[in-house]
Length: 89
Image (cartoon, rainbow, N blue to C red):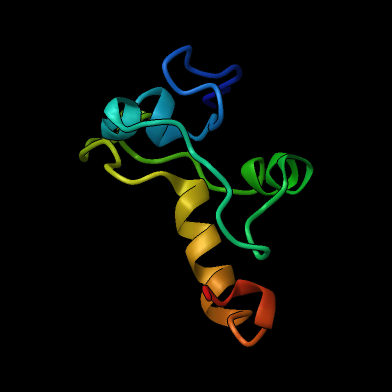
């Protein structure tokens, strides 16, 4: 069992596995852009439900290159894009 805690000093705004151990550590800090983006409290709940990647558990594979939180934010935006406050003017 792999237990991961803490956040990377280079990306204090996101503590997903891709930022802490994967290839996303060199990307800038995450900034909320839309009303559908996860709050920090929502992310704390969702983060614990995500499976541990195979490469981190020693089963091989490549480290993730994309932030898990940003991927979930993108899905939420696509599902919830009918709101006027999310449109750019």
